[in-house]
Length: 173
Image 1 (spheres, rainbow, N blue to C red):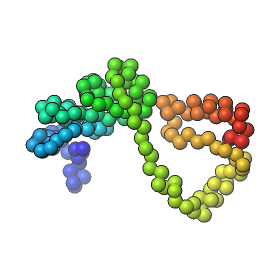
Image 2 (image 1 turned 90 degrees about the vertical axis):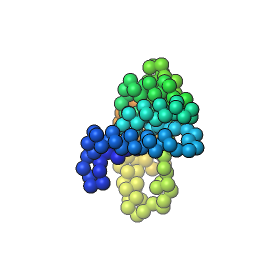
Image 3 (image 1 turned 135 degrees about the vertical axis):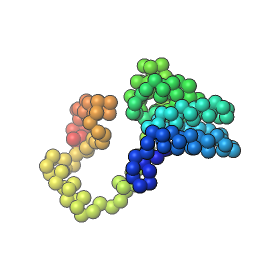
Image 4 (image 1 turned 180 degrees about the vertical axis):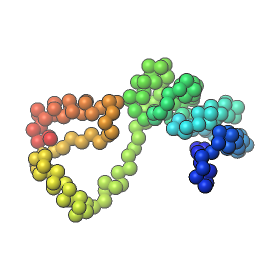
């Protein structure tokens, strides 16, 4: 992506950003063996996506776009519609984009669970014990839905599903 600040920490001026974009694209344009261009729409510079798409057409290489939220502008919609492959990270965005006439594939994000594999500390054990006691969870199975509270994350569905499961499995908390 393009830097948004100079090394000293001062924000780049619009002209400096435009110059950086031009220089970056000139580097890509001259690259040998360019087989594929993948654009991550989280890059705040839409102009970069547009220029990369144009470069893909000029160089006759596939253009992939990964949309995982953010501003869905007309420009981003155009890129999604004209990409060789368009991907998103959730069925929610797949449905939103389908409503706009854009077909995308879903590739769910893969979380880094390495921190969950570490042995529990004594502090972890104490915290867990307090939660088990406070919520009467001893011997029960717990349904977790770790996500930020936002309607598209589906917490309501998880609550409804847990109620249904609890009828047949009273050990579920």
